[in-house]
Amino acid sequence: MTLEAVLVVAAALFSVGLYGAISQQVVVMVMMGLELMLNGVILAAAGFWWFLSPDPTGQVLLLVVIAAMTLEMAMGFAVATLLHRSRNSDMTDMATDLSR
Image 1 (cartoon, rainbow, N blue to C red):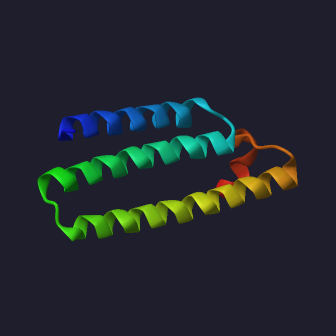
Image 2: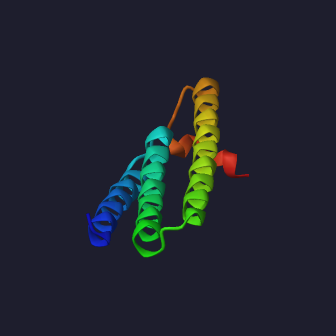
């Protein structure tokens, strides 16, 4: 496997995630799109780390990013669950008052 192959797969993940995040209106689907986009970025960073400078500092940075991403997704799913329970809706248009 080459760096170019890893970057192509990362770009494909990012593109599919971008399409999913833009085209969906359900909160969970938007979050899944964002998750795919972040996974594409992490895969590209891991590819650069693996092929250009394989020292352990890159692994630590990727683990920190993955931990932050997991926490962010857990908080997002908690907000989506709370929104669904309180309003019986999971559409992004119904959650515009959360931005205030």
